Amino acid sequence: MRIQTDHSKCTGNGLCAGTAPTVFDVSEDGYVEVLQDVPGAELAALVRRAALNCPTRAITLLDDDQ
Amino acid sequence: MAVDELSDLVKITEPSFYENPVPIYQRLQQEAPVFYYAPLDMYVLTKHEDIRFAAQRQDIFSPTGGLLLTEIMHTKDTPLREEFFDPAGELFPYTDSPRHRQLRRLLTPAFTPRALATMTAELEESCRALVDTIDANRPIDFVEAVASRLPILFASRLLGTTSSDVTRIRRWSDLLENIGSGTLTADELHDVAQEFKEMSGFFLSEFDRKRQHPGTDLMSTLLDATLDGEKLSEAKLIMYCTLVLAVGTDTTRSLLTGMAIALARHPDQLAQLRADRSLMPTAVDEALRWTTPARGFVRTLLTDAEVRGQKIRAGQRVYLFYAAGNIDPDVFPDPLTFDITRDQDISHLGFGFGPHICIGAQLVRMEAAMLYNMLLDRFSSWELAAEPRRLTHILRNGWHDAPLVFTPANSDTPAANSVAAARS
Figure 1: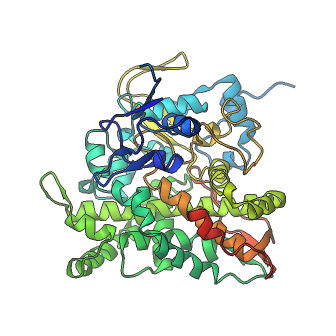
Figure 2: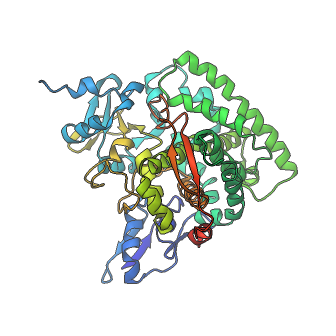
Figure 3: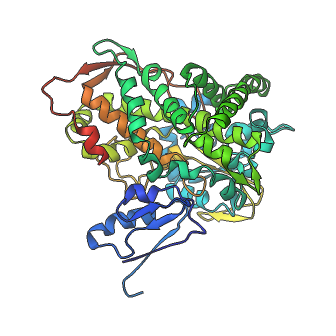
């Protein structure tokens, strides 16, 4: 799984960082920051949840072969 | 016996509707999930998926035509909100992007997890001081003693106000809360708005003091911020500070109260949470789902659109009925059960969704977790001493009071380090 984020959609609310704090953060410029682009399998469920609940759909998850 | 027509039952603008609305929410979801509410030419959305869709697509569903049912009910020459807020302040919850993004971005950095982490020690101090005031073994009003105070103390700390006169600030917050209640006439609201404007005077004197002694707080940041190439006008500064201090605090009061009441009614779950604080995040989110402090908001369609096969025309409105979406069985199995272990894969709508989602969501989660960890350290349980009195209000699900009796923890209970543990 690879993570893509779209700063044109991100509002910097940090809900993703609340859900998966070792994977997402909000930087000082107010946008999502991905701490690990290719998170381990043990984080997959949390990362999916963060993406699913991003209020502005700024997080996209790609399969490894994409 | 004939089944009552939904059109006779769905009275979303009447406070009495909210005395027992759940059976009607369920019927709406089953029979008419996109329900046409003729009095306001509005479609009421009760399915979680539809509400999320509309909340997220601000290119179609715009807040510019009003957010509150009361605003649509009291259509006058001057929008209701402009009686409370100077239009020059550009109240950003009512704006569309790109302006919405520009305005909101000045506030977001203060609410990120990183920013909040730097304030944890300060906020804990406020929280602990408040929990210290709770007398055990006798009835106290939890709303007055804790739930109304903590959000104001937190918001004051965040803003960096020199005064945190809780009674005065709560008064303003309560005045503003009237805007969505549906119990006042337009003329009565006009009077309320006049009194509310005192709050602007409070902020102006705070700004003067802060200009002389700037700090690292949000008010200092806003005083220093630029928008459209210039410093923020007083109207905008007042708009931002009012949103933080008055708009965000009555909703949080409702959540904190709802969580206390729900745990009092489910003593087994209170004990379970006390024994296992790792459940705190799911417990807080379940309390958000259970309480849903803001029952719903309005959007106006900018273009024709379709929701669940129903065509809706540009200019018509939809009501995002969060309270109903939060008991949607397609998302929340056994939705009427309060369950602190409910792991919400798809989140509740307690904060709304889309670009207008509650800006303080992370602060509120942190605040509730901090408070309940401290309460569970200090007390082994609490019980209702009398039935809490619910607000008569069409927007806010909240309580006038919550009479509770707290039972002190035994001194041998090994719970003292849980706040630090939950933070790490």
